Image (tube, rainbow, N blue to C red; front, side, top):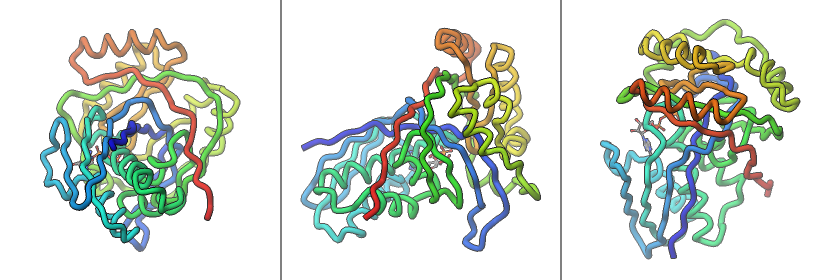
Length: 291
Ligand code: ATP
């Protein structure tokens, strides 16, 4: 038996980062959006042991791969005897602010739970995901959500706002989430405009939404990698209603009203040597049922 599912990337439509909590994590608030750029995760249950192959391979030890860690945690938490062969086809750029590792971990947990007869409820799976990384609970839920705490408080949002995205970053650039957060000086107070963004999404008011989007980490990431600012400018010049850093970067997303415009701009940026892709928001969420 082989089970597979796409591991979808995310962008942060808004990201507020406040001070450090006593557990060492920053307090965040974010409107997160799943997009249709995805890795593919496959698992084959084994009687015992864990194997993982990643194409192309990540230059990290096997047991540092978040999907591997997810499988270890699944078997520890359920006390099930068993194992799995995991194969990941990476399409989401690594260390790019698009949550690729978290998406792989979430997909692995969901697939293993399916393969072993659903011993864990969606709520328990999300809690387990939270032990692996701040973005994993949202990666399990998908869709659009208001995320708070260190990422473990996920409230799904329903809307039918229709827009198109162009993602772009300089080829071969990475930013370590930890480095960006370490250099970031938290503001006293972040603007409390999340609910205005949600309202704009719900009323399909792209112009208003575009004027509200923000990312507290953008200034820090731009200082670390000035080409981020050039990409933002390029996307704006090409007609994006807004262009913003996703997560801790370096990927920037531009918002477009028309799909053909987004496709044209992605082609133009590719011609200028950037890594780029046109993408769409994925609006449906996996709903966790309380035990
Ligand atoms: P964030 O979730 O903080 O936005 P990101 O999208 O910027 O993260 P990822 O692609 O998730 O970055 O990778 C972050 C780090 O995690 C990388 O340095 C990578 O070595 C490690 N990592 C572990 N497992 C994976 C995986 N399955 N895919 C990608 N990176 C992984």
